[in-house]
Image (tube, rainbow, N blue to C red; front, side):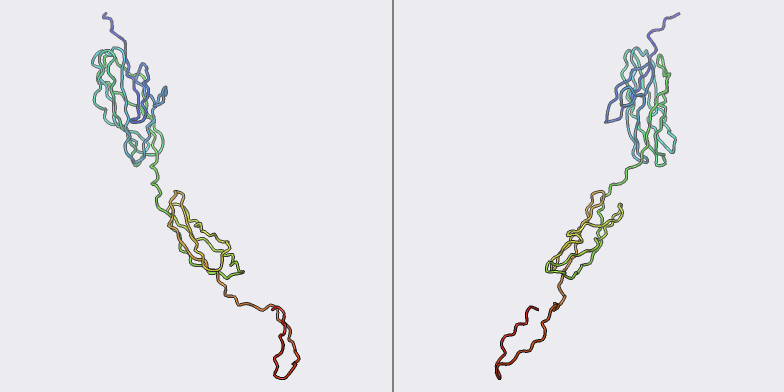
Length: 268
């Protein structure tokens, strides 16, 4: 009986997220899927529902003496539709021969169709052995695909402040008057309506004459509205009122056709 040469080899499978972090190769006796984090057996690929495909690498490698004629294939596309994951026809052939064969890198893409349900899907990475001298794959390898919702579009629209008519108030003293008013409403395409901030504020002591009020508003996204203005005018239209009148007085004349001397009426 002819003695078998070498030992049974296995392909090591490592998943690498393209352009981010290279995972350390996990050495085992079979094909395994490793995550970016070392010593974890799954890799999670995040894809946006209805968005662009995400590319990553699957690195196939074998160590020891692979002999000859060891050829494998794996799918290069994983697509989520509804709650199911489909795979493409297996990729081109990848061959391992000789002692410590060169690792083979397979560029793989994942996408989520517009009807994909949000959530995580763990799928098996199927390995097809076209021919094999000493390679085998006894334990299934898995990949986790997480489907997330598209990001909401950025809010770049500023709110709009409603018109506010001018205010006229009667002075209550030489200092003017304390005037109150309702701040105008700011309307936004995302946020609920809210009151603008005005300066000077309602309830301020306003002097006689006109004062310009400036109102501003900023939505939750930081978009500032175009400021609006209106005028508060404090006027004095109240006629004076005599609060104390002197009593009638009778003064005796001192001579004919002679003016009467000054008469003191007191303070009115």
